[in-house]
Every structure is written in structure tokens, then in C-alpha cells.
Length: 295
Length: 270
Image (cartoon, each protein chain N blue to C red):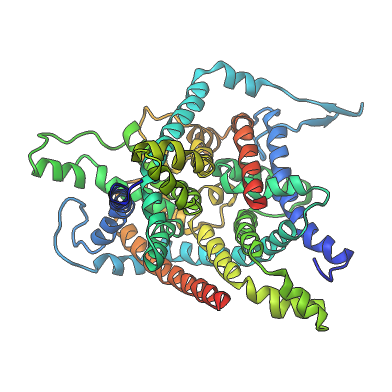
């Protein structure tokens, strides 16, 4: 920056870098360390990784926690269940979000500002509250079942809450704005003359959409999908409040391992595997973001 | 696409999308005024639950804790995030830039359970080595400031990307000192990002359940933790009332931030 000496630069870059190294990167390393420890009763409830019994430091690492995760198919099913739920939620968000983003991008002036504001507003309201709001709607004697019965469409309440359906609904509902905003970004930058040109050349609407609009908005689709997929995989609140006994999601497994079983090393191992699985999409997200900034 | 078809596509999408997003929130607000405890029965308009909420000491204490944590964390986030945003926007290369960029972006999407668990293990390790920090409001504040700073840095960076550097150069050419340029030109121009960044960090902190649950100690309960333990038992009208109040405050704050941004945008265009 102009007029900034070396000390200034060092502070400008160094302070936040040091903070993040200390409170984001270092903790991830500590998780790896604890995942190699054994669970024990005490404070803290895990064994030290290095012990000193007179003859110098001795490393006491175990892969027992990872063996447990690999051996018990509960974990594998939870990882796959999370991935499946998150992937389906991503697809549904895309399906619902695209027309919404399209509608916003097509509107003009103050209307567009208002619509954008309404999409952003849920970001600012409580995530927990918005998930909770669905309980009253989906309960066996909740609003939806009551309405359906009153309309004579069903005779007995449908099981809408505490199952796969409610978890999926919660995921789509909570993460929809994260999909719409990047899609809107892509769609609003779209050169309208390209679409007119396609129409002039005789392309039908669907053809224009598939061959022009969709390919040009792929960056938005990719960004939105990453913003939904990655956090949804590790989601805890939604499976806990809206899920049922058949809901297996890794964020909830990790939470239970930590808070209920108080097995910190296994919880850490679950986290390590999750981070490893998320590394590729995370790096993709970063590349994406940097390219958007460079453009 | 001919505009008739596209128009219907857009309008239909908007109606369904916004209906889906807002119907549950609207119902929540509506039922906070229901005299009955049951969701299914509308027993008439009542502000009973708001009264009950104000006399609920658990919520009151947790609310104060949350506000204090959120205000401190948001301010810390603002400082750290602004420094980080400047670093990334103004320096195309420096050692560690790639790692820095990753560490700024990853907390935005990494599942909260990972952030929470990793920070807790850090704090526990620190405590056993140095006897500090004891878990509670301090550790929650540090945790919230960390991810808050990442959000602020994104906003600041985006605002700086559209910043006309000629303004700074002109001021320097006219003899202004770097500090004066920063406080009289640069910071005022990016102030919309600073305001919305602080507000975003504040609401994110106020809203966080998962990270706070991991890093807290026995001494501190935040509002989301209190709400969560209540709603795990089912629908609670007091929580509906609380949510409605929260929505009102958020609405006013966000509208204010939006107005600030619109005003700054108009001024820039003039």
C-alpha cells in the first residue's frame, strides 16, 4: 500500500495471519494429535502423545481410533449418509434457487434491491430459530398435518418430522440463500445481447437456456454448490432437531461422541477424516474465489 | 429467451422461492401471539409469551452474555478482518499468501463442529500448559472473532476491489500524510463494508450454537445454548416470542445498513 513502510506491512499482514495461524490452523493440527491419543478418564480425557520415562521422550501414538472408525460401519454409514443428504440438498437448492436467482436478475432497480435484501435477510436471522420453526409445521399435530386433514386430503397425520424428509427439507431451507446469491451474481453479469442473439438466430427458449445461459452461469452454479455442500455435510443442528433415529449424519455423530460418550480422541479422529474428505472441495472453493477476485 | 416465457419462469421462481423462505418465519411470528401453548390451537391474540419471556431469568442472563460476547467479538473481527482484507486486496504476493487466503476462506464453509472441536482442543491444551485461558466467555469471544474476521475480510476485500486508487494517490500528491489519507479517504470510502462487516460478525456471534457449545466452560451460557436446550423439548411459545423480537431488531439493523450502503453507492455515482 502507498506510503506504508515495512513495519506497517508486517503489522497489516502479520497480525491477522498470526491470529488465524493460532486459532484456525494450529487447532487443526491439535485435532490430528489428539486423534492419535487414547481415551482415558481424567482431565483432559486423553493420554499425552509424548511421555518422558527417564529415557527421553517417547512417542505414544495409536491408530486405534481410526481403526474403530474403519471397523464400525456406523461411521461409514454416517459419512455416506451426510454426503448423500448434502448432495441431494445441493441439487434441490440448485433446482429451486436457479429460477429465484433468474427472477431477481431480470428485475430492475428498486425491485431488484428489495428482492436481494429479502434473500440476504435470512442470513441475518437466527439459523437455529429458522430450523426450529419447522417443528411446529411438521409435527404429527402440526400445521401442515392439520391443514391436510382439514382439507380432507388425508385421514391420519403423515409422519413428516424426525425422518429423512424433514432433515432434507431443513437442509434445503437453511442453505437456499447460499445457493441463490452466487447464482444471482453469475446471472446478473450475463450479457443479455447473447441471449437475444441466440433467439435471433432461431434458437428455441429451452435451447438458448441449455446452450447459452446455463454454460455461462456455471461459475455461479459451482460456487453455490460448494457453499451448500461443504457446510451441509457437517451439519449438526438440522439432524439433531429435525432428524430421527434413522438419520445418520457425521456432524451429529461427532457431537454425540464428544458430548455424550465423552470420547475426545474418537471425536477428533472423526473430525480428521471429515476434514480430509472436505480438503478437495475446500481447495476448489479457494481457487474459485481467488479467480473471481482476479477477474 | 423470449421475455414472456422467461418472465413467467422468473415470476414463478420468485413466488415459490420467497414463499418457501418466509412462510415458516411468518408462522413463527404469528404463533408468538397465540394465547394457547399448543401450536394447533389458535386461542386468540395475546402478548402473554412476551411477558413470560421478560420474566425468564435463564434467557435474560444468557442474552446478556451473548450480547457482551457478540459486541466484543464483532469489534475484534472488524479490526482483524479489515487488516486481512487490506492485505489480500493490496498485496498481490507475499510469503504465506496462499495459506493466508485458505485460512480466511475455509472458516466460512468448514462445518461448525470442526471449528468448535479444534478450538476446544487448542484451549484445553493451552490451559494444561500455561493455565490460561479458562473456558467461558473469553474462549467463546476468541472463537467468534476468528470466524467473524473471515467474513469481515471478504466484505472489505470486495469493497476495496472497487476502490479508485487514484483518490489515494491524489491525496498523497497534494501532500497528505499516509495516516491522513487512511483516515480521511480510504476508511470513509470503505465504511459501508465496515458497518455491514461489524453487524454481520455481531449477528453471527449472537446466532452461534455449535462452536460456543464446544468452547464454553461451566460459567458461560449463551442465548442460542439456552434456546437450544429449550427447543430440544419441543415447541416453546417463549422461544417464538424471542424469535419475533430478534427478527424485529435484525430487520431494523439490516434496513439501516442497507440504507447506508445505498447512500454510499449514490454518492459514488455522483
